[in-house]
Amino acid sequence: MTQSVAEPSLDDPSATEPAPTPRRRTGARGARPGGRSERVVRAVMHAAAAELARVGYMALRIEDVAALAGVNKTTVYRRWPTKAELVKATLRSLVDGDGEAPDTGSLRLDLLELVRRIVAVASMPVGHGIYRVLLAELHLPEVEAFARACDGERFAPWREVLERAVARGELPRGSDLRLIIEMIRSPLAHRLFQLREPVDDSVLQAVVDTVLVGAKSGGAVLRAASPGPPEPPATAAPAPRDPAHR
Image 1 (tube, rainbow, N blue to C red):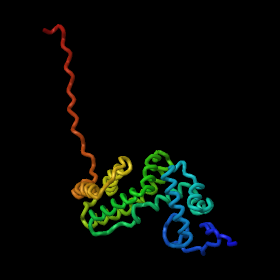
Image 2: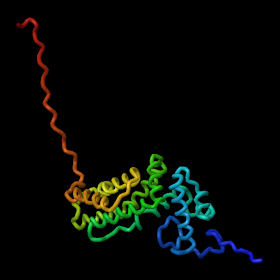
Image 3: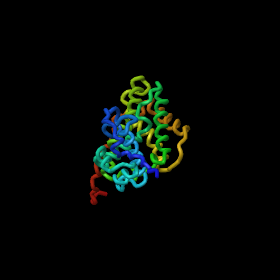
């Protein structure tokens, strides 16, 4: 009689490899590309993204993520001690594209590459679900806190692209870079996540070109508020009429 041998799980000690040297930031400590540690990270990230899209942040349970990933919950807690840290790491794994700033030598082409990354992430059911859930739960202080914490990472490649454009003279100095980023990303987010409408490349080009026309002409350079119209001079009230005077 042949005895079947079960395939070892990600938590099987016999599959453990020597502790690797950290090489890149994945939300976990000591994840070696291609090693068991990275396989665990990948499985947990996929499971956390699926659960976050399904139930949202408040209803997310580490136990459910661990079960879906095929690991013990202690494995998850070792790398991400709190639910907030797990969610932040999951969001980092879904950053537009690979997080690197494109460098084509043209501001317009760089921005088109960045907006195409947004659409690529939003086109994935999990990515779309997570964005919608976060928008619905953004009023919660904890969700708002880690959403703000992720903003710096999400905007970093955009800032790098725009700063290079300022240095090349494509944008005037003093331009509000965050305003330009928001002017491009906001209409796309509105269409994708609130209206749930598809966004094709012609829309992406129209959004980028419209914002660039204003930004290149200095429209994003914030100026001091101009003083309002002068107050009209006060007029003296007429003297009361003497009733005896005719």
